[in-house]
Amino acid sequence: AQSVTQPDIHITVSEGASLELRCNYSYGATPYLFWYVQSPGQGLQLLLKYFSGDTLVQGIKGFEAEFKRSQSSFNLRKPSVHWSDAAEYFCAVGVGGGADGLTFGKGTHLIIQP
Amino acid sequence: DTGVSQNPRHKITKRGQNVTFRCDPISEHNRLYWYRQTLGQGPEFLTYFQNEAQLEKSRLLSDRFSAERPKGSFSTLEIQRTEQGDSAMYLCASSSTVGNGYTFGSGTRLTVV
Image 1: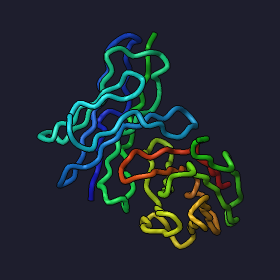
Image 2: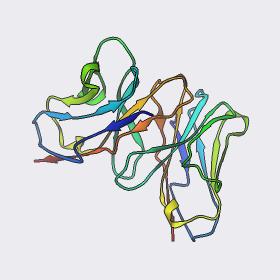
Image 3: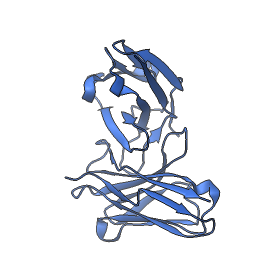
């Protein structure tokens, strides 16, 4: 079965600084990969997704992620964070076929310092 | 397109009572998913519908849980004889194609007292 590891439970970043959130997955083939963001008490919003092709994926709100097959990673990056980026971020893997739901990591809580 | 709608937003119930949640997906989406999220955890997959057919159920979905999607439109998730461990956020998501990125609703937060 597939799994997702987000090694950082909390990350604190100063406003305007760059950000990288780590995600490692375990699956035998190339999965579908996703990053979602969740604000307190809210549902999840899709930031970006990777299916195939270019391994650098651009998303909404200035986020990007890079798929590295050799490292089984899909790290999320942003060059300059804003206070409104403070939220919970989830990496997820889907194994296609449509019959399987997504497997999520436990999330990384992003704190923005003024 | 009004997004995925879930009702109610919050539900407080006494242990042993039955509860039912509703999810209205994006109208053109034929796939519908239910997830459960407990505090400090990522969402966990519960079950999945393609149109009205329930195609997969997680082993997390005990006998007390049942989901339906009559006519392939809205879906309901019922929990019978609720237990305190059922307290969680129940999220619904819908999708139009395989792996297209699911659109999530805002969830129903269940508290069992």
